[in-house]
Every structure is written in structure tokens, then in C-alpha cells.
Length: 473
Image 1 (cartoon, rainbow, N blue to C red):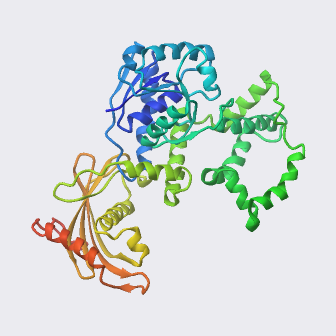
Image 2: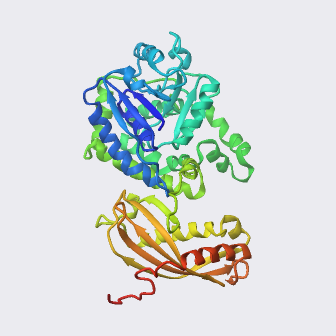
Image 3: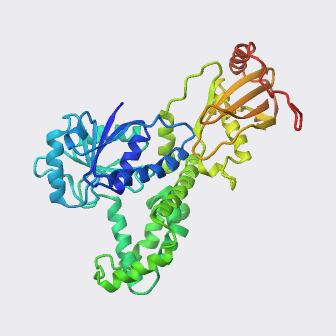
């Protein structure tokens, strides 16, 4: 098991703990704060609830988490070290001197700094690269890498393996890339509030109701390319470029941080969201992020593409008697007002199992693009036990019949404790997508289906197979 050591267990450090731990890494934490273990456990609770919900495969078994009061003990055997202490250069120099002395020579050493350059971090002999993440680290994929090229390349491989998106900055610069953009928006926002143009809530609404949604899937320049219409970016630049000379913004001027300005902003912020605790706000944020990022998975846009790439790396459990066609957590979006998985999502889960089985017999994306597929014509669902948010759902699939145009499957849905939570019996017919009518499958697909049908023929008929609605016993 690979090991990561997190030095500094605040909000960002706790997010790093969750990202590595929930991807199967052993994680050690060094933080002298006596509240570090409590704080990280609360971050982990949110991460355990939200990160698996992004995926349609199960993440690896959770790694082992340990806390240490001795830095050398924490660093022993680490292949990744992440420093996330407060943004004071003298403190970072002190910490990295210790890390440099105690960490394994082959370990990647990253700093979560949002502003310091590698040359500043290493001016006293350290060997650190910038690995700047975004909160919540366990959900948002971006990590800005700055520093030695070979180390950044090795770091990129590690980060992709835990579902993150490494972006190597071409030249070191104060605040890297993303925070320079955020700083510009932050400065302008301070002026808009100070000058009475809007409140904190109104400014946030302007972002989340408009360009924030566009940026989530296309960023800045691709968004503006579309704004240029059929003529594209060149037309956009010609049309809106002159506006850059207008005195719209105060980007090079910052309002003085007087007590009055701080009180104004803090008071408006309390009025905006003070009715919720920080943990409630974090869970709301996480639920919203999961929903948007799952939507982006369908097109592979933005963060959705990163999740898809990571999910492809996740292993599927070995089949025993029957093939495992689904192995995934139940996301919170699948639960209803009763707190358990809604009946519609039993069908969705079984449809995922059918899709996976179709891939196993060769009826994959290429086959469908060529004009062949199976269509469901009938389902029968039995609800036998409850499934809840976060439960690991495993589905096995048995072929009851596979000949001619017909494919008759029986899915068993098992819960976290292995209990049988539901069965879904489904009948499908092979279709010619061009003629929009039934047809025989290709010889290769038919042979593969027949091989599964023959292998499953010796199994007992599943309990519940062939039932009708309301049947007793």
C-alpha cells in the first residue's frame, strides 16, 4: 500500500488526507494541533459521503489513517509528502528543512501554497514543488504544479491515480494561475460592495446564476469563443476588445481594509448564510458539486472527463459464480424522503448492469455505433430490503436465456452487508438501429451470449424468476 504523509491538518490538509485515504492509500498525519484528529475526522465524514457518489464504480478499500507527534515517524516510508501549513514563508522554510532531512529521498514533496513560488520555498535548500489544490480537495480535481519538470511529471502520474487533474504551470509566478484570476474577481467584488452597488449575496447570485455555470464546463476562453457566434473568437475580440480600454474596473486599486468595510462584508455574509453551520454549508456545497460533476460525466466535459478517466482505472471485482456487472456506492441523489434508495433507481442500477453485460458480450459503444443494440421490452422488480445513501451496491447477472433475438437476464442487487436487496428480471430484444426493427445479433455477439447462457444453464432457477405482480409466496 502506498503511503502519503500530510503535514498540517487544517481544511486543505484534511482534504488531502481524504483524497489519498479514500483512494486506498495509507495516510499519516503530523500536526501539533490537539484538535487535528477531530477536525480531520469531520472532513473525512463529508468526504466519505460525497466522493464515492461521483463514481459508478467502487473506489478502492479505504487505507489506514494514523496520527503522529513525531515528524520522522510520520514520514517513514512515504512516497508523497504534502505540506499544508499556514502561508508564512519562515514557517514553511522551517518545516521543509525538517521534511528534507527526514523524508525518503525518492518521495515527492509538495506544498499546498497558494502564493509562494518554488524558488522561494527552496531558497534554503529544500526540494519541494508547488502542488496547489482547491477546496474541497477531496472533490475538486485541479492541482497546480510548479517546479522541477521531472518531479512535476512524476507527481502528475500520482495525482491522476487518485482522480485529480494536474496542471503544470509553464513559468513560476506569484499565485500561479487560478488564484490570480480569483484575486481579480475578489478585488472587484470588494469595490462593488464597498461602493454600495450590491451585497455579498447579490454578488454571489451574479456568479452562480450566470457565468459560474458556464465556467464549470467550458472555462473562460471557450465560453467567449461561443459568444463570438459563427465568426468565433476573432469576432468576439474585435467586438468586445475595445471595452478593455473603458474604465469599468478598479483591478489595480484595492479598497482600504477598514473596520467599517470588514464589518460591512461580515455582516452581509452572516445575513446571507449565517442560518447554517459551516458543516451544513460544506455538505450543501458537496451535494451541489457532486450533482454538477455527475452531469458533466455524461458529456466528459470539464471535471466530468477527469472522473471518467479515473473511473476507468478502478478495478471491477473478480467474478465468482456470476459476473459482477455493477459495484458502486449509492449516491445521495438516489435517495428519497424516506432516506432509502428510490424505486426508480433500482431500475437505473439494473440498467447499468444490463449495459455492462452488453459490453461483456461485445455489444459495446462501437457495436451500437455500427447499428446494433438490445432494447429492454419488459422488467420485473422485487424490492426485498432497503438500500441507503453510501451503501455499496453490488449486482450480479445471470443469463436465463440467450438465443435468437432474445436476451433474458436476472440481476441480483446486494447491499453493503451482502444482503439481497432486490432482483430485477429483464427481457431484451436485439434491434437493428437503422431499420428500427428487431434483428439477429452479429455472430460474435450471439456466440458470446450463448457461452454465458450455457455456463449459467446448470445453475438453479433464481427465486423470483418468472413472477408476476401480486403473486403470492
